[in-house]
Image 1: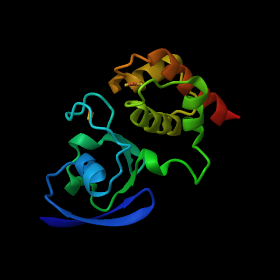
Image 2: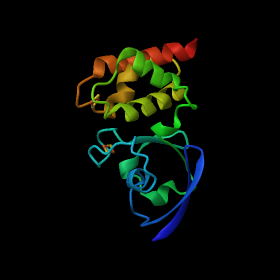
Image 3: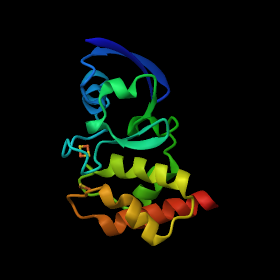
Length: 155
Ligand code: FES
Ligand code: FES
């Protein structure tokens, strides 16, 4: 067991755990941040996407020792009080979810995309979101939501 300090959604936290344990397990089981979803557990579906120091990562394949001292953003930290983040608003406006299981990862990935490319082309959106699987096959609406989020943030 080792002790790790990290910042999660702007809050300093300390966890004592096995250094090889995944960030996903720590978020969900120790910190009760269950908005980050377990899908494949091997970095292939995107449902566990979080931002680590502003960059998207699959929390299922990041050992907690590699997240030490980093700043982590999960879906729970995106809204400002009662005000949803513009990307969350765009997903709602487009109805870009069915069961919602993939949605936190899709939204955080979109936040990262728009930070890197504020005006992505359709091809760039598809390429960026390629690693995300929606088992409900809501891809058309998800793409529309990403487009809407980009358009809204350009206003
Ligand atoms: S659960 Fe992490 S990528 Fe699928
Ligand atoms: S909305 Fe169900 S997995 Fe994407």
